[in-house]
Length: 185
Image 1: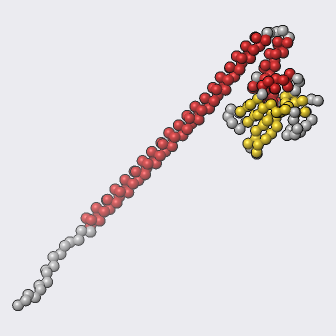
Image 2: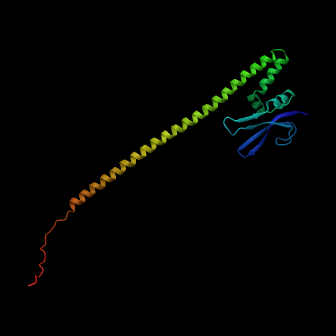
């Protein structure tokens, strides 16, 4: 029986997530599988990959062939590198301690890269939000100044017309003699 390490799709349209499974090469993509060894969620940045490292090593050691995406996931998690180092130990190219040390330094370097990516994503998000707020503030200030200038012009026009109307329309006061009331005689 030829076994493959591949992904089994779950989730809804445009929000897929995957199970990393060991399956017979003749079974359909979402069909029967032998063992589930992990999860892969590409919807987040960076993608979330959970993998049972020991079981993946077991299946790679027993000849399971990974698909292209599963190969990338196994490489990302270091399963293929560890398998490569163990093959070197079998050929007496290096000792088990040397292989473990090389793998440990590789894992530390990989974790630092992932953490650097996460912090860069957070910093870029904060910087873009800050620049957007600054741009919005500039637009608001310009809009407020434009509104204030327009309002000031309207007020000046109103006061100018009011002053001219009061000067032109000042009625001349004519004095009319008061009617004489008949006095009681």
